[in-house]
Length: 301
Length: 331
Image 1 (tube, rainbow over the protein chains, first blue to last red):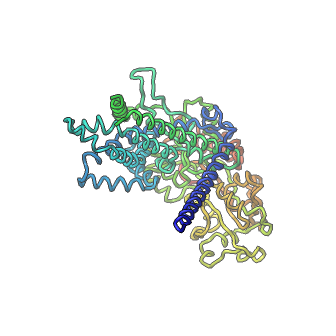
Image 2: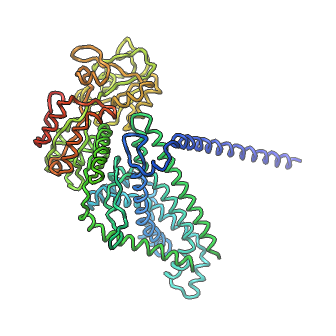
């Protein structure tokens, strides 16, 4: 009887704990949801086609997000192009080649530390190196490189985790049939870990989308009413890289500018820009989940 | 096997893209011919310059591009006078005249500038809407409230400043120390050798200051007139006692223009790089600016200069007169 009472008591305790945890998470989610909902409701009147196709303006109803979202897309794509191959390569090196070497130890300490450095510091480093020493100017290229620096530690850490999760038996089996180290990495380790790596990369990208401080430091603008040159041209060689040299702004900066203006008209624009950022992040996370699902299904062991 | 090809494809594509990018950058940097006017500086002047840039680009149908940043007056001058020519801006927005150190920096980099006033702003001192006790304030009282000296003396209640005021602790909200607005307030109220107290809430975003004072019954803050004008339902502006006539004067366009709102009406400037002024697109833009500043500055909540001043400014620009020279007394 004693033991049974005790059991009932412990089960009751557990139920209480579950209830408390549930209340906590529901209230946290409710706060988040209501804030997001309010933002969407405020921004809804502005969320139309015109908002995405017009430049900023002093009239709130004419002001749009065109230069900002194009800037965000360019900067983020560039950052991904630079940071993903480098990050994955670093992850491979650290996990497969550099284990236990002093070089790897130094890199590892640096990478872990870098992941904790506040974004504004990256902005200052980028200002010193890209803008002032390399003379890259206050351009899309500088912005992309800056965000790439910011993403790099995350990508390295994620790649390492993903590669480490591949069972040793798999690699050993490949070695046993005479595969070289590179063959093992290229044919087995990378394809199998790609799903997890991609997920991590996309999470890093969706964080980078909201980044403002480092971009302001390297000279992202506030008012810009033209688009960078098109990357595709009608003449040979059909691609142009002039857009790399273009000045830029990004969505969070445009949003901040609208919030800090006198008058309430622009608050709706800011809310709409916020909604766009949230949708963009949700979409990217959705893609991450889908990719992981697809790639995991393709891999079987 | 399918996955393997995918990996190779991704890696190959990114590698090619990166290589192409790096290879072509240098060439493109030289060949880019689009005419761009680079402007940076004060966030107070930003709305006027933005309005001018918007209209100008509409008129030019995209043949000239204008970019405007908000690094603050000081940050703007840093770029304007930069020793690195590729970072220099053509025009700098400023909510106060250029400082001696900044003139020195410009001289060192060989940058000559033309100073042009473009509008007035009335720095407005506000308190909470429900603050019935205080209606006007003298420069001395403002100094007592905001100075470092008073903080050290332990002054933090209204009635320590003026015995007629309530016995309650005031809460201060003001622009951050990098802004030209702060610089102007400091010079006009506290004097050159005085410092501002450290226990106020600073923000670069004037709406944060508006919210702060609107929510705090004992709040006080100062910012540009445009922000007060948009929030008259939440804030109460104080009349400033004119140091000469001893009469309290409310901030308004009229009182700024007739010169009675003193000492907090401040001129706003643009500084044009002399070398850039020789470029036809910059010349055209500045002339367009001065001709439309009256209409556009009013639209965004500022006080236009008298028409005569814009003519004088245009004449100065035509002549290319450089240096920090007041256009007339008070500008």
